[in-house]
Image 1: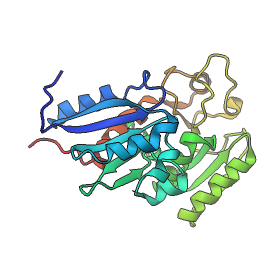
Image 2: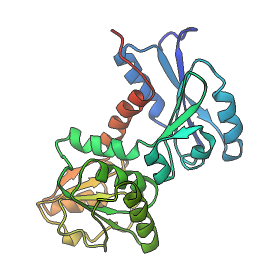
Image 3: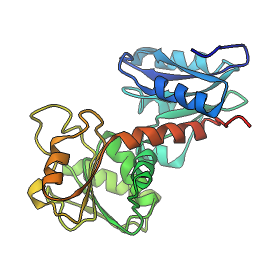
Length: 267
């Protein structure tokens, strides 16, 4: 383990429960590779204590910022002093930067991480048509990022149509020129197909869309990281589709979080 001194910059991840988080390992590897004198540690905070915990953390002069995960992504917004326009429309944040004067600024990087992960694997989204299953959690952030990075149209399919309509409305508030449709389980006719639901985490889960309608010309993407090969990706591969795994989303989020938190490589 690296030496921690009085000059070391502190970062944390807030979660409940906390035992499963992988971000400390990934971010500390990033710090080491960058030659940056920082350390990220897990902060276990119950929802009822979140406001008090955050109030204490913002008073730490050597705190660089906080990464936020379940179940705090929504509640954190109201507890910060400022937030990006996108995170306010999404209604959640997953990273908070402590400014030099102690103010806390929130942002959401789930969607940007997903798109950067796609691009890192050679799948650009600009000018492509996209289909997304889901309208909660990660889907909110991914919808905003797909539009931000230039998809020609986005189709949102969700079991509860009202949630899909609500997400469509919020994206159009920020990007009024966007072409957004409400879809069905049929993903045909789109270049990029995204599962932004939790279906596939457990063995025996229903498929998030009608996989029989997939074609070899499509790129089928997951946000789920474990299992690596979900039932959807297996079905997509059998139909000749290009498949994109969930792992690059996390790897690229680490880079984006480091950038947002002001982590710079040693010269």
